[in-house]
Each structure stands twice: as C-alpha cells, then as structure tokens.
Image 1 (cartoon, helix red, strand yellow):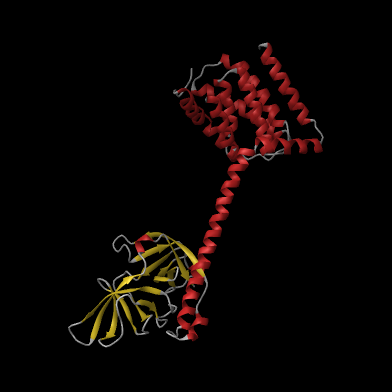
Image 2 (cartoon, chains in turn orange, cyan):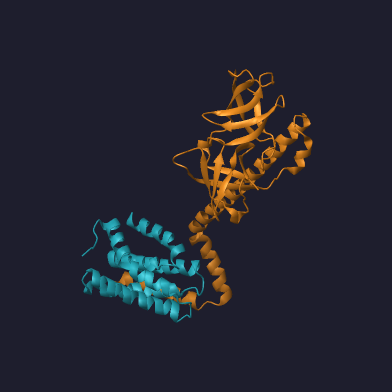
Length: 245
Length: 139
C-alpha cells in the first residue's frame, strides 16, 4: 500500500468512526446538513415528478369541472332563450367521470370506444358519454373495470334531438351519414342550425351538442326533408371522454 | 468520463437500493476495475450516500464499504477474472457487507433483496464492463 493510499484510507476510517461515535444531536445535525448537499440532485428529480403528478391530477379535476360547467351553462342558456323547457335544468345529472379511451373496434373504428372505467366506478349501462358539452354516445356494455361506448358514428345509433334555433324535434340517426329525421317539408330547419339532444331519449340529458346542419334537401316523398348533420367533434381524435353518471 | 458515469449511476441506483443492492455491485465493480485510491474514496462516498438516504446509523455503511473496498484492493491481484471466481468473490464481499451493515446493527433482513442482488450481480458487472471498457470480462 502506498503512503498516499494509506493516508487516504486512514483519514476516511477516522471520519467513519467519528460519524459512528457522534452523539444523537450532532448526528442528526450533520445528517441534515450533508443531505441538503449530497441528496439534493435526487430531491430535485423527485420534486419534479411529484409536481408533474400533482399537476396531472389538477388538470383532470379541472377538465372534469369544465365539462360539468359547460353542460350546465349550455342548458341554462337554452332555457333562458325558452327554446327548451326549463324544468329539466334541475334534473341534469352533474357527476362526471373522466375515462381514457383504451381501444377501438377495428371493424368499426369510430363506432365503439373501449374505456378504462367500469361498473366498479359507478357507471351504468346507457349512461351518456360526452366530451365538453358534445355528445359522443352511450355506454353499451360494462365489465368491472372497462366499458364499451357506442358512439353516434355507429350505424343504427339513434337519439331524440331538437333544432336549437327553431325548436323543431326529430330523431338523429346514423346511416351512411348522420341524419336528422322526421322533419316535415314545412318545418323551419336550415343549414348551419345547431342540433342538440332533446332530453327525450333515455338517460341522455338535454342540451348536449350533436352537430350542425350541413345539408337540407327535399325528399322524393314530398312529405319529409332530408337533413344531414355534420358531427360536432371528430371521434377518431379522442383519447379520453367524460361519462355522466 | 467513466468517473462521472459512476457518480450518475450511484444516484440512479440509490432509490432502488432497498430492492436490489445495486450499489454494492457498483462498488465491487469499481474496486475491481479502477485505480485503488479512487476506489476507496468512491466506496466511502457510496457508504455515505446510503447512510444519508436510508438513515439508521450514520457512519456504518461508510465504514463497512471503506474496509471492504480496501480488502478487495488487497486481494484483487490474486484471483483470475473469470465468471465463477468473480461470482464467488462477490458473494463473500456481499455477505461480509450484509453481516456488518445489516445483521450486526440489527436491521431488518429482506431475503428478496439478498436473492435478487446475488442473481443480478454478475449480469450487472458484465453490463458495466461492456459499457465502460467495451468488453464483457476484463481479464
């Protein structure tokens, strides 16, 4: 062993013994002071991850609140314009749960969404699924921890709807496109009218946006109009949704 | 550059050290591969960090790592670097460390940690060799 090495070893050995035989107060004081310097890089990283985690939880909470408020706000606005009956405002279920989209049906990509919440989280079959104040669909089936959402893009999906401007009621149905059906030839429905849920369909609250009228044509039967709706949101862009329960 | 890498690894391994004793493996590797003076100082530093991060009794790990590193510095010239020998030496190294840093101070003995450490010791040493010296075993 070289002299330098012996010197280093002896010094470190003495320091170790000093640490071991220090009294408790001095030990604690020294630990705190040294930790501040030596464990600092780890603390910095941990604090950063903790901050990210807390921020993420806050974002989820705020998004959920925004969703609730948008639905409530929209319904209140509509009721002030007397386009919808005001008695349903108080009936709005306002418990909203965020659910991540964890899969899609490969054969019907926008028709069904798989979400990471199930009946364990309090969800029920036919519960409305929204994004902000726009309707996405309803829950088709549930397992303990997952659920399948049938969206308005699924052929055959139908719900009761109302024209936000004129208050004309009809049925929105998905075929090759989204149709607003049973609109009579003399009913006041025009292009760019917004179409909302009417609240007449089971479990679906009133006032959720379905889409905007894109085309109005007269049909051959001369009794009904053909009204095509442009959906309010692109379902293939969603990676999370909100379930009202 | 390698020195910096060892210190970065020390901080990375520190939070998971209660599950797998990676810091003991790192000290073992550094003592076998690096300069003797640096090895001793590094072992002392690792002991200090463990004492600060898992505070039970300040100084115990420092002392154990220091003495063990010095012991390994003495004997490392006398054994051949082949897997079985490296493994046997590590087991003895780890056993002595465990005896003085855990059993004698009366700390909780977690058998999973011991088993995982022994299983992962050689692979970790080989990976470190490969990263630092571009060879799996430095003879």
